[in-house]
Length: 159
Image (cartoon, rainbow, N blue to C red; front, side):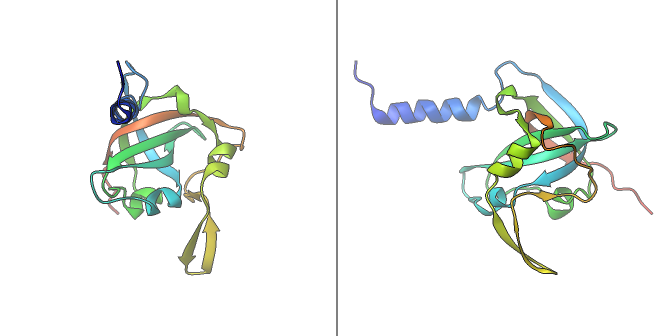
């Protein structure tokens, strides 16, 4: 029996898309804030039905310096707005554990592509943009990885 190359590509694509999280892993819920994002992940997004991928760090409320690595797979442009990415808006997330992408903080930073960002103080090259609202653990800190299923904003506090 001869296997066609397109059949192999279809099978590989389906297995990557459908098994993003460990098979049989259950959804977990967390509340907190985005602690960091990688600008290069956002620049290369495609508006069509192509699967886009963003890697984020998430600070879980009430856990000190606990950070989770989130893999956000979505079609079209990201729905994560600036107030969420900056850590100004708290969010609730549902995610599935994926131990295959656990990583230490230092490697997360090193693997990010450098992007030039224009701002108030001129241009800077950023690999990872960290929220000023999160304290960071040591570069050797090992983060558990989750595939983000969905997120919702938490109610904003009224002044």
